[in-house]
Image 1 (tube, rainbow, N blue to C red):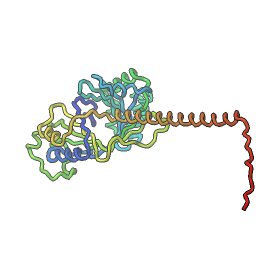
Image 2: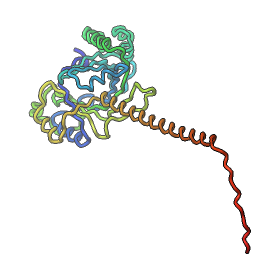
Image 3: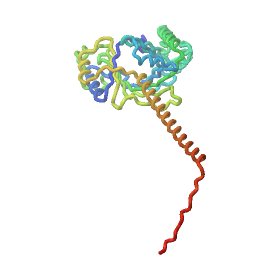
Image 4: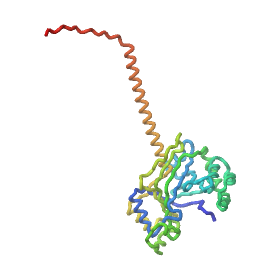
Length: 317
């Protein structure tokens, strides 16, 4: 049994919530769900793309099938910490994820072209069990799928860095985070019965991005206002009735929100603004230079002016 889930197949529905809706939905989960054992977690994702950013361009066209490649870590991963190289695919609304876990140093070497097994052997995880998992037949098979993805879309390079703070909720029957969540409502058998075991709800706040294609990647830029969040409901089946009623009560509706996609849109909008400002500045400078040139030409071509001294008749006092 692995220490992490390396394959996902489920429906994931996103909702963009303002601060009021965010508070209402977290309140609606009390008594049924609670933050999992990880609590609030910092997630750092580095998306890879072609030099033309063809992957995200195609994804934003909303095709029937789309896929992305990213390197994901939690907290502030160091060279020996475990991170995940992950392919995320979506087909007809169902999300499929295939990922391998290895050290950050191994992941960087692998994405730079070193064979997966060689990278894991050169930069093993300190934990013996995790190190063995990284080289298990299942992980090697997933690495071959990642290799095929990279071969289809090469060359790939780091395109966007996305960070967010995630709080993941699970059923009270499935997680031991209820006590640490400070939830005063006791868990009842009825509450367990109407929460599917595989239902997970995440809230991503403080989402920010850095454009790695920029000549000098600057500070992170926020994608949401303070208090807002992106809620994602992950389930293999229909939503329970209480959840549907909670969504209706706070007027939360499904929204297509891709963190990488929104960051890319923000980058292109900023680039257009910069290009417009630069074009305007150049036009103003050209106009000023033309005006100055006409003035100099006029001075050089004009005839000397003769001024007549006005006659002065003394006034008798």
